[in-house]
Image (tube, rainbow, N blue to C red; front, side, top):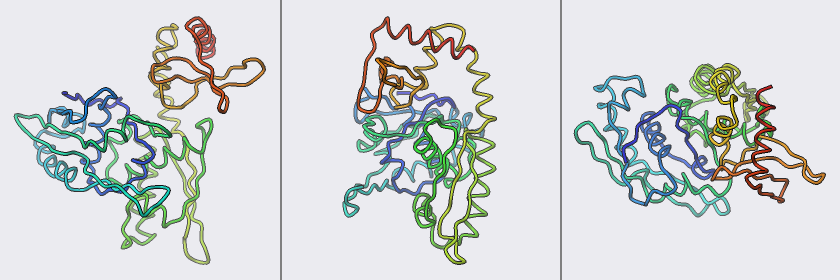
Length: 316
């Protein structure tokens, strides 16, 4: 399967993969993200995925020569640096596997076969998972910034019901573990080389921004408090792009399905027989309503009425 990398492609990661431990360089992490943003549920195990090196260079804003020289090392890292996932119930149990099982470069195209262990963590998403656009990480320089973006994005969605603000306190030890920061890094180094740099870069390139506070025990920093918000500049750009989607029910439904199908997010509210329900879309883009464990599915006529109502809300 030939992949044509696009900035607007969505990346989905299961909670297990998000919390996994691994060491990859920047291009290797971006490369595997591009690959699994194109993996589909119906793809058979062992399926090959191809990328033109020139397409990759164009996406990264580099020359063919630059990306070619970096690509061999990035591919080597995907083959040699495994993913490590601890069992949440018993940390003595774990699983380890490579990102890809093999790779081949020929005539300007690089061919990958992803690990059979990786595919379920990308598409068979049983519980919570993270979803974001590839464009959010393309311009981030350094693995720490990419991983921090993913963690903050996850915390924002997990701890903010309406997606407008979230706060999260973590120990410095946990933070080191999340980002695989070596113990040789003092807090001064973490603050200067990661946190302060990330504040600037995430605001400039991604859909979120953050502040942080140092929490001390005695005179030593032992915890960090993060305050995470959507990036207003990015939202304004997205809103201008999405204006065209509000012109008709057809374009509006396309927008909802693109953003909400099968990801557990809710885009509307409805009262049914006196009970309050959140409206969502399943993997097939069909409307359902949920209130706790109570779930109601709607037929075509009912769905059309719901869409018409929320289209008017969006237009106004």
